[in-house]
Length: 260
Length: 249
Image 1 (tube, rainbow over the protein chains, first blue to last red):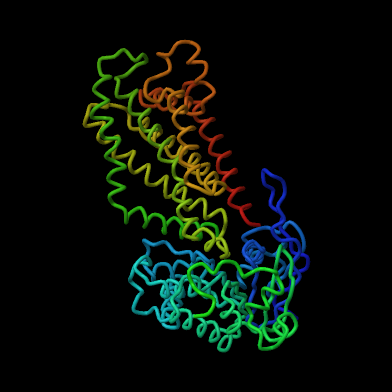
Image 2 (cartoon, rainbow over the protein chains, first blue to last red):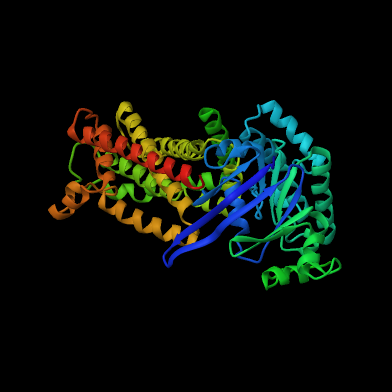
């Protein structure tokens, strides 16, 4: 039984210029313990899909279950079973690392003592232990990212959603983060659902890729299978494969090059 | 659950307030300037009604400050949305209502504290009013803050940018203040302005509070004031709750 499955999941936004179908109907399944790369050009509907799967946005069509909880009828169950790290993170710059971690534990309904203990544990696991009393505004990009992920892991979720987790990080921090994601899966069996614009990241990290374009899934499979099928050979670059599938690049990769 | 979650959110934002001591000081300083530089202008003017000019000025001043303070409360949530804090909390099982109430109660506690300081300063300046009346006044101020802060947070959840939020709030608060007779009583106004002011809910609050400050508790103004204040709070909290629940399933 898949840990995430969606059927025709769709979201239409009503705007002044008429309805906009951001997500037209996503069908996908994710197996437990899998690292899934969710790719697509800008505007393909990646973040909208993620926001629906994390209960932030109500779907206008279709259905989905996350860890056995129905998105429409049991959003609270979905929230308890999954963690979400948004692209923007989600910490207050004026608050200390410790307070953010403890508050997060309390938001997940731990007692005060449990929350304090869990904060220490997370800080040790994610190498934040010496930073506990710093304000979050005083953290480096890589440290901030580790804190964001620690917040998402507070309740030991079965599924972790990461929205462009390495955007803006330097190469060393990216490599650290990849290790962390692999460790999460290997040590805890956590299923990781991540979006990225970096094809090298998808290639290195994901067991399987789902490529979306214009609000629907246009291809899926392991990186090598996709290369073989769409790029012409198993030695094709993922970049070429991606272009062959979507007809365009994986969105401007802002400041960081595709391959470092 | 709701109580525990509300206490958690209240604590988070109360600590935030206590950290920004400068803002706290400024919040108290501004109304003091009104008392000091505006209050004395009124002492010899015929403002109508019983009691001294301070008994007319102080209730209006408290409501005016509550109006502006609470109406802008939503600004904080726009900043937090930018940091991703709102969504981070919304993916946890925390009660949606607590996310609103914790913030609103913080705003109310802070404003009542400032109101107490302001009244103490006013007493030094010359205000004489019955204690019961002053306490009733605090209750009105608290209800005003609860209702306006709820509406402000609801609006801020719906709007995406501070650029639209600021002007919207300004456009609503300025006329509300002028049309409610917060600065000077509407009994001084020409008939058309007095009539117009009756569409403003704050008009009823300030009339009731001015009655309380002169010790007249069993008046029709008081009855209308209580009804409007409670009604406004009920509507505002309902609207706020709905928006906080809705914004994402």
